[in-house]
Amino acid sequence: MADIAERKPGPARGFKKEAKGRMRNFMMFLPNMVLLLGRLLKDGRVPTAEKALFLAAIVYVISPIDLIPDLFPFIGQVDDIYVVALTLLRLVNRSDATVVRQHWAGGGDIVSLADSIAGIAPMLLPKRITRVLSSRVELGSAAAVLKSIKTKNEPLIVEVSQAEKIDASSKMTN
Image (cartoon, rainbow, N blue to C red; front, side):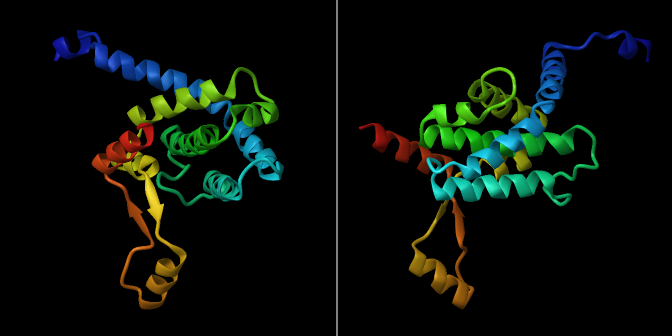
């Protein structure tokens, strides 16, 4: 029993502890990041689809009902900030990063901050939650979606597998 108490944390344990410390620091930015999403909702340069995602992210953060409820200290907020970071990175990837930077009122560079959050949060969240939040989904055509709503026999959203993601990205670069 004394051996266990005297054992020092290994490299993996120390890395996770450091990641938790960094994520605690990132939590201070969550209110500013939600305000940023609100400002981006008003910007005419932001596409409508991105605005819908921003609104959904704001509701997700504010709502007490989410994948990990906020009444669980720390981990309940990690999924919230992860969702916000992913939506911001999506906008940066689909448009110009200067749009996001112009509306940022917090300290530091918001793009690198969101990138750091998106890199650390999956290490702290359960793997299943990470997969749900970061998986790529695609909507079908409008006609197929309307038909599936009426008949209730096909899913509206389909997760794209990792192999399909790699194939799609290799086709885009060629």
